[in-house]
Length: 339
Image 1 (tube, rainbow, N blue to C red):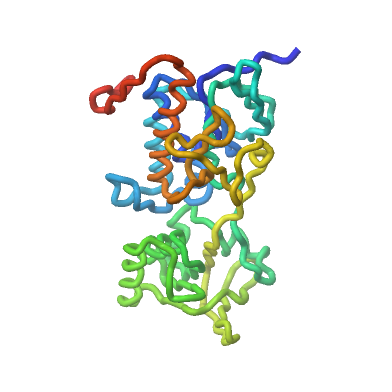
Image 2: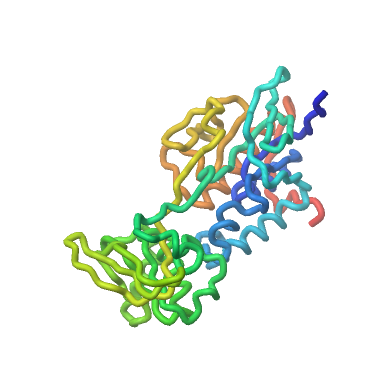
């Protein structure tokens, strides 16, 4: 006979920044949370892929490293005593006879909840790798898709490839400590925050960063996993070699929703369609917030994910406390347990 499932108000799938903030928002409304994440630590991509990456669009923080942001969010959630189930993936989501949800994980954890909040970011994720011959021999040694320790690149010649926020943000960060920073992009326009691009262009004018456009990666030179040069080429085939000790390739993440794709939700191009306000999915009592959620006008910003977490918590409250009026109060007047 199987053991009775754990029972709670809300299960949050995903322990990234938005999932952690959802714990806080639910807690402020007196709802208990269990949090499940496939990684063995909280933080999602912020912890696994770029703990030292500076984030510039968090209110009241002109810049904060991803790992520090996660620490602060976990501290903010702590007074509400969430139960974390880490290193396991949610595999099944089943509606119960009581109208609640049974969540079952890859290691047999079973949780019965009134509502489920999917804050799984991009789902299962991995870097998009450039199609370069012999790439595998350099991966993890001198070719990287993330920066775990900024100091690892001190005094090195670094080639950064990509045109998004990660490429621009790490250019700004590493220009201070690297011997040389090259930025490779296939066109002069970058898909990053305009202010960050302006700061990068100022570094180029000052000679602290060399812009290599319009070029794309064409090959790697080196031995025993250590780069000596990165070869780049124009679309016309004009090629040159950049002396390099390290290549940072930022071409985004490949998304895989994994088991989420089989839960009967309204999927739109590997995202979950939700309705506003509340971020409700097509399944009653199931909500999606953060990068995995989509709706007209959606902005993929942590800031927006935080707002979605608040909306979802307020939408769930009447399910947990039916018939009880919710009189909204600001946290300044309401306070936080233990604070």
